Image (cartoon, rainbow, N blue to C red; front, side, top):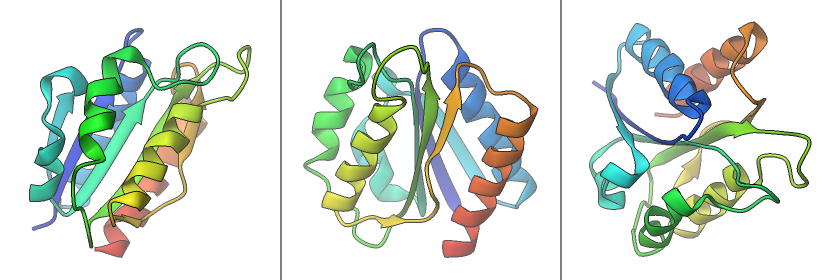
Length: 146
């Protein structure tokens, strides 16, 4: 069985919603899924799964949120060679660098040897019907890479 770890950073609840949408789809696809909030998670947990997913918001002008910085830094010390990853998250076009934190986490996954399993999904604020369809497709693409 494919093991999936979804880690989310959320203040408004949007990225927590994203994480639960993904959890539901991965379970529908037959995966064993674990979901956790980023401040309550050890980055090394990604070493024990097949698919690693980050769902994060982007803070103000396109930076990784303070809540996620320790995890972000700890990820840089991992060896995730051969692991499949996907990044997604919410943002607000009002600010510059829409959903930049999603891309910043993708860069770290690339640096530590993980394999990109799907294009990032970037959502304006809370997930709506089309976003949920995009997240379902995202999960399907990740599962195909395992």
